[in-house]
Image 1 (cartoon, one colour):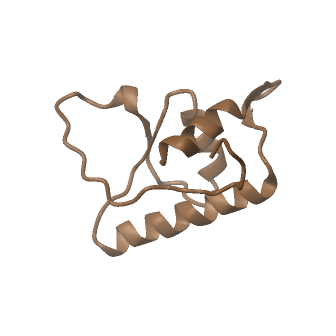
Image 2 (cartoon, helix red, strand yellow):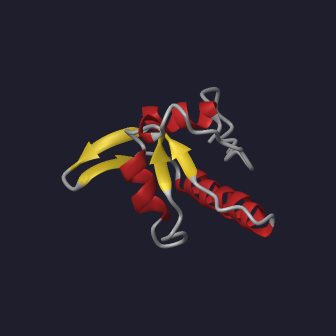
Image 3 (cartoon, helix red, strand yellow):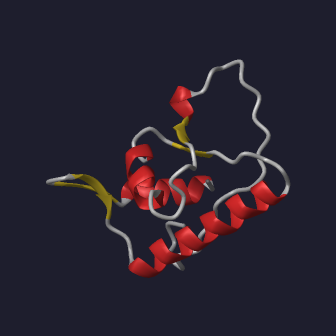
Length: 102
């Protein structure tokens, strides 16, 4: 995930009765889901098993957001990675929300 997008999402986290949620425009949510779909599909078409990496604070929100579209997509926080693991990025999730924060 693009670091600017991740920062924007972290700043948009709100706590509700049932847990954290993203207080973002529905259009940005749709663009995010479209971008995840494109990046995951491209990685799978290249024979890769994609994983979404994000901060530990975003992980549960990302899981709920992506559960219906990508129920088997592993979502892992950077904190869960072994320091000895070598990653091969195959794509980056980017969304332009036309605001200075992103």
